[in-house]
Amino acid sequence: MKKTISIHLGRQQFIIEEDAFSRLNDYLKTLEASFNNEDGSLEIMEDIEMRCAELLSQQTANGQQVVTLKEVTEAIESLGHPDEINEPIDENTAHQTNNFQQTESGPAPKRLYRDVENGSIAGVCTGLANYLAIDPVIVKIIFILLLFLGFGGLTYIVLWIVVPNAKTPADKLKMKGQAVTVESIKSEIENAAKRFEKSANSFAHKVDQKGSQLSNRFENIGLVLGKVFGVIFIFFSFTSLISFILLQSGNIEVVPVSGDATYTSLRSLLHLAVPSNQAFQLFWAAIWLIGLGFPLFFMTLGIRMLLGKAKRIITFTLLTIAASIVIGIIVAVFGGVTIARDYSVVTEIENTTLTSSADSLFLEELPTISNNKKIVTSKGIDFIQIENKRIISEGVNFTFRNSSDSLFHVHQLFTSHGETRKKAIHRATAINHLMKIKGNKLLISPFYSSPITNGISGHNVEIIIEVPTNKKLFINNIATEPTTTSHGMIYAGEPINHWIIGEDDY
Image 1: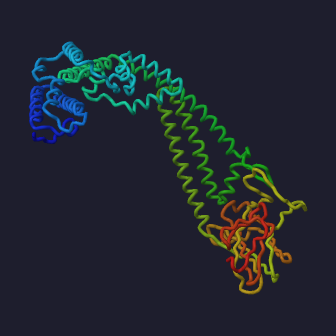
Image 2: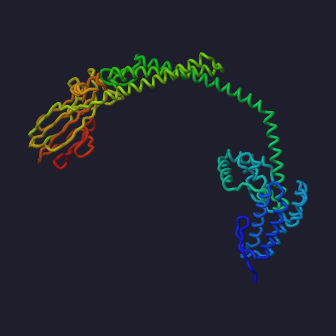
């Protein structure tokens, strides 16, 4: 019967007999003392412990639960004794010793790792070359061929993810198929330090030699690219500048309309959107400042790139144009404030009230008549409709509610805005909308109009229909879009039939 203890070695847990632990502990302490003055001693000891744990795991893989003195002794024999590493180790000695150990105990099994240290991207090709004992160039050529076949890139990425990186000296020895011993680990660390020092000195030397060449090369590339971009900036800026001037001059009409004309200019469209003269002037000035500023700025910048030197006149021009763009933005903000003031007062007026004593009322569309002809449908790409200097708008809101008596009551309400109440009332009264009662039919037009001087937004028409108790309103031959059971909109479109409104619907 022997006493056992639990230890952690190389990130693994083992149950080990006391005499075996004592032997292993003495061995590791002796190694640590021998490497105490060595560079990278901590890394060497960590790799030795990892290798020792790996050997013990292999020896107890047959179901053995406890590590005995026999397994520890075999692991120490595999790693090597401390007295074997007292002398400095060079590459030839390490190589001869490693070959002797491989011959004595058979070749060490290779493991597939990524060789990032000697690789170009992720070390996949160099790792495979080490594993297959071939030139890395051959592996790279194979991957290039696979890339043209369509699956080389995916294969490389999968190997990059799956194959581990050879981080430790022990991993690098396994990657090359060399025995992992105390001596080989120490040799690998010393060789890695020499390689790093050599590469650092070589890099510094190359930087000193080629620094000026690279600087000149990049400078020349920058000059060429600057001239290319300069030509591009000048061409597109000049094109944009000419297009902007032609569009803003008012001589070219590009906005589709219907009615009095087929097209209108951007200036006329802006006047419709901004009816206030003060706001229009501010926005028009802002458009010119910004619209001219950006093309001129990039054109001047292109000239600066072509010349290659910053002349004082060019710098002054760029600053002046940039200032004009900023001024244009400020002017546009003032124009926005002026427009907001024009919407500060909203007024609703009741224009007409119609009544009907019919038992049922049928809501239908009032047909649009042009040259004594009924217009059934009209389609096109027109952005806005203007007739007889009035803007034609589509969409009339409606609301149903209970009548206070036995009659149908139809109220026509106009809403508009203005800087003052007087101006808002004036704009509301200028709205035109047609509706009438003919027998038991309520005819409502889906269109309404307002003067062109009042602009295209901020106007509204609402029809309120009061339905008496025990009477019905039939929605017949008119296009409607209900939003609730008692609210909706009348518009020009495919009519619907037999939508019945009674006292339970509002």
